[in-house]
Every structure is written in C-alpha cells, then in structure tokens.
Image (cartoon, rainbow, N blue to C red; front, top):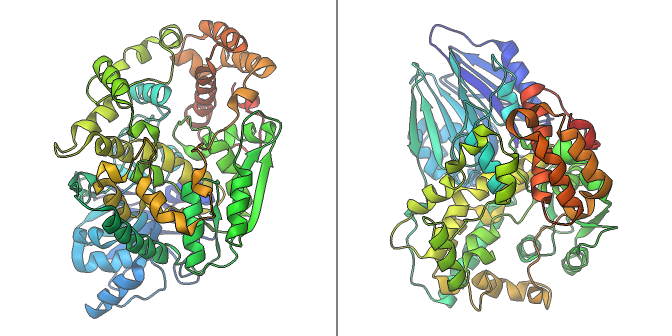
Amino acid sequence: MCGIAGFIMRPELRPEPELLRRMSTQLAHRGPDDAGIHCSGPVGLAQTRLSIIGLTTGHQPMVSEDGQLALAANGEVYNYVELNAELRQRGRQARTHSDSETILNAYALHGLDSLRLLRGMYAFALHDARRGALILGRDRLGIKPLFYVRLADRIAFASEIKALLAILPQQPEIVPGALRQFLQNQFASGEDTLIAGIKRVLPGEALVIDADLRIQRHAYWSALAVAPRDISADEAQAELDGLMDAAMREHMRADVPFGLFLSGGVDSAVLAAMLHAHGAGRIKSFSVGYKGTTMAHELDEAARVAQHFGLDHTALELGIDQVFGRIPHSIWCADELMRDYACLPTSLLAETAGAALKVVFSGEGGDEVFAGYGRYHPRPAERWVKALIHPGSGGFRTRGQWGGAWLKRLLGADLLAAAEQDRQPVLRAWGATPASWSDMQRRQYTDLVTALPDNLLVKTDRMLMGFGLEGRVPFLDHRIVEFGLSLPDGLKVRRHRGKWLLKRWAEPRLPPGHLDRPKRGFHVPVGDWLRGGIAEQVGRRLMRNRGIGDWFRAEAIPDLVAARQRGRGSGRELFGLMQFAIWHRLFIEQPGLRPAPNENPLDWIE
C-alpha cells in the first residue's frame, strides 16, 4: 500500500523534482517505508511506499528493463503469482518480488487489455514512453483512490487530494453541487469532487493521457455486465464456497503479519472463520465499543468470535472525548467531506492496529454484495409511496439527510440553486441498469457505484492509511461481487432478512448462535456528545467561521443549536456544519495544515 503522485506536461516541458517531492511529502503517511521519484521526458512520477510484498526489492517508481515503461502503483495485485507464471512463459521474467511489477510486465505484453487480468485493489500511473502516454488506472470497485487535475501546462494526479492542493497555482474553489451532495447524502459522488477541477478516476476505468494532454477513457469493467442467473440454493452455496476459498488464499499473500477488524457482526466473523480455516493462526484482532454512553456495542460478540477462533484479541472501550477528539484528524485523512461517524472509531482502531501491524482484514462490502441492508428490500407500500413522491429510482435513496426547513434557513444562495444535484448520482446509476434486473439488483448496483467507493471505502482506505495501515476487503473481490449481484432475489432475502445465502453458507463455520443476533451496524454516540455546552460552543464558533459565512446563513445557527438543546433533532445539520468548517480551514484556507490524531475539534472550527 502506497501513495502515488505526479504529472504529464506539455512535450517541450520537463518535470520539476521539487514539485514531485512537495506532492510526495503530503502522502508520507501512506508510505512510511520508502520514497522515490522518476522523471522521463515530460512525465514525473513519485511514490511513497508501505512495504508488504517484496520488502527489499519493490522500490518505486519502477522502470522496465528497456527503460520504456515506468510505474508508480498503490495497492495489491493479489493474483501476481499466477500472472507472473504466465508472463514468464511469454518471456517476461520478473526482476523483483513485488506484486506491482506484474502491472508493468502485463502491460508490456497486453497493453490496456492487461487490466482485465489483474485481480486486486490498485491505483497506478504508468508512463509508456514509446506511445508518449501516461495511463492512470483504478481497480474495478474503487477500493483504492486516484484523483487528477488539469492545469495550464500539465495534468497532475495523486492518491489524495491534499497532494494536488500542494501544487495548485491558486486557492481552491468549492463545487456547490458536490457540497450539496455531502449535506444531503453524507458524501459527494461521481467524477467531480468538492474542489473545482479535481476529479476522480472512476472505478473500473483507465485514463490514457497523450502528449497533447488529451484524455481518452477506457472502461475495462462494469457491474452492468452481470446477468441475473437462475441457480438453486445448493448450487449457489457450492459456488460461493469455491469463490471464498480462492479469494482468501489470494488475499492472505503478504510478507508481513496481518490482523483483523472484528465488529461482532456477520461479515467480520466470516473472515475470522476463513482466516482460521486457511491456517492464519493466532493473528491479532481488534474491536471497539464505548464507555459512559447509552449506546450498545458489540464487544462481547466480538470477544466470543475471537475466543472461538483462538485470536489474539484487543478490545478498545473508548470514552466519548477520545472518539470526538478524532474529528479534525479524520477530516484531514479523508480529504473528501463525508459524514460517516464510523470514521472516528475506525481511526482509533487503525492507530492501535498500525502500531503492531501493516495489514488488517475488514468486512466491507458484504452487505452490498449479498443484500444485507434493509433498504434493499423495503415493504411494497413504502417503496410505492417513495417512488411516487421522488420518481426515478424506484423509491431508493429518496430522502435527504437534512430537514427541509433547515435547508431553506441555513443554505446560502449558491447552495440553494444547486438543489437538482442532490439525487443525480442515484438517478444516473439507477437509469443505467438493464431492464432484466430486479429492483433489488438495481439497489445493490446503485450503492456499488456511489456509496461504496465514495463513502464506505473512503473510510476504509483513508482512516487506515492515515496510520500506515493497509485494509484488505475480500468481499470486494470482483468475482464475489459479480456472483452476489447475479443471484436471484430469493437467495439474498427471505422473511425480510438479508444475506440469506451468505448466512446459510457461513452458519456451520461460525460459533453456535452467532447468526441469531439482530443486525446493529457500526454506531457512534454522536447524540451523547453534541449537546449541552458542546453544542453551544460549536454554534458560537461556527458563526465566526469563514467557510460558514461564505456558504451558509450564519444568523440561523443559534436557532439550530436551540433546537438541538430541546431534543428536536438537528444533530446531523450541526455536525455537518462543524465538519465543513474544519474541512474548509484545512483544504481551502490553509492547505498543508495537519492536525494531530487527538485534538479538541472546537479549536479547529475558527
């Protein structure tokens, strides 16, 4: 796992090593073990490395033997062993033990078709000197991030937005529609980010940038190609057994020890069972809960799973101040505004695990792939009413996060004018689905291309990489994703309970009774913290924040705080404003500023 950055310039120009080092410095947390830069013609590449496979031979940027190809890569190619064997038969002998070299050698033989051969999580930049092109590629599900921006004399790219901010010639500007999406959906989605001009390379896509800085898009994978299948429960269970076995064998490839985030739910328990079955031994596991709060946690269930599989378990029982002291650092890590409260305990888990390990397994993706969320199977009346009021997505993802009255009272003119952007990512995804799909498949797909890469996986990648820790997510092996999406609805949900097939397959592998527990989710006691004196202080400071003054109507904030004190909701709105205020300071007003892991969030609002 690493950080990558660089640019391709106009043909007559040459890259400045100092700019590459400036970008690389902003990614040092992603790769504390090594760093390098490479310049050739108009292209400059930089990489910071977290060494996991090929510890002593995987220095990057990596250059081919003939000097015509250069690579900076982030992530893991899990099937590098099998691919290297095939490449050797074609005369491409690996010179290192790094899985990243497989990208270089596969491209040398197969060009862009090599992307279809890779299994893993990755984002890379590959300079093809003969072709005079720079290729920016991203894995199928968007597990690893990659951003780019077009400047006057170059196109620059980086693993994180903060590295691009380091070379922008002017102060960053905010995209109103993307900010609206954060407020209403808790994240912005699609190609555009919150920073004008900075865009995402989309999952399953490669950008080919030629010498004239023209961009050609190459989509090499899409879940839209998945066809519904007529398959029995027994056939599906046998197929799932083979897929999980293959995915786990590949994901366990590492030259360093690995651990597991154990929530106490189904998905992480399945990973514990599979790691145990594949001989991982007494690996370290980590779970989190809270003290001094009314919110239930899953520490007991996680400890029971850990004991059953003989794991070396650490349970973090956190105080409220510990959790919310993570707010500034988690916003800095995320780059992108997202109101996933689970970023806060995930950050504490990452710091704890990162002190002992470089790799942890995590259960992200299980709900999206096997239809675990209740929103995938609503009651018919609920679906009908929502679809009638908000057409275009079958009643899915129809309600905004903010109360309508607060939208009118708090949003400035530019944000009010961007209201049509709120549901665009959902409508776009829903409208792209084949007519042969069921509504459940459409709901899964919509999340797979919006909430998964632009929210859930942002948390998984950035919170962990903030402490030099790699997260591996086997449920998002694309073969398992295709399998889960293709299943008949009746193998996903029965009696309004999701993940039916996965649970049926997993039951004999898990501790007795583990599947009888209701689904809880990864909750955070925001309501216990954002009240009383804290809410009042947040409100006062927000009114003096520059970003709030530019984009919101600060005069309505006292009423928002008063409503919060009376217990009439408004927690999401107040928390969202606080996040934006801190983000605005870190990414608009003072790019390059970095909070420590534990800070008083009040100190960062103004």
